[in-house]
Length: 239
Image (cartoon, rainbow, N blue to C red):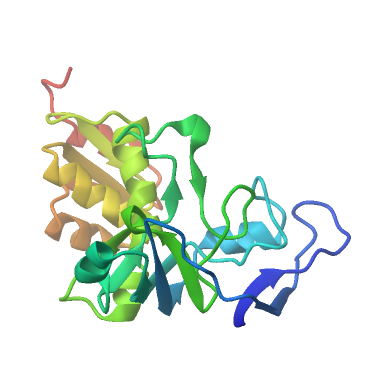
């Protein structure tokens, strides 16, 4: 058996209810062909977990453990080839499902792991069995907790920037509220793709840091004429 965290259903309307957390004992997962067993070493929380507990997230499942972000170590494999490739390695678990047929991520089939219908696990459990294709080796220069905090924020930013925003080199991009994890990932993705990025924030320090990371410029939205300032920063020859 293993321990896991789920939410317990109570009466209440979406946005007013706050489902309590419940620790449960679940059977330790068994691996199938093509799968590996990962012992979770660290898991990260997102605001998504708050939305789930408030019933403001679609497709909530009260039996599936919570958590979309996690790093673990591969402790068991289903074949000699997978053992040679993965056994004993520290890995990041991919938080999204629905990318198998398209690198753009088919939106109709897209799902996030942890506490939702259609996905069998979350990262707030001691062990996870999953296909080897759903993990990546954890970056060696990051600590385990640092690596655990990357996946969902990075994936959310990627989808916003490329899957939904269709960003291309030369585009002008505005990222509002720079400073959060998703916004910072989006900034770095857009800069790397060759876009010109502008940011807004209520903090001059955050704007300065964004410029250090490659933003062309930024404005403080607490200033009354911030939109006029932003318009003045845009290239005159933009499409």
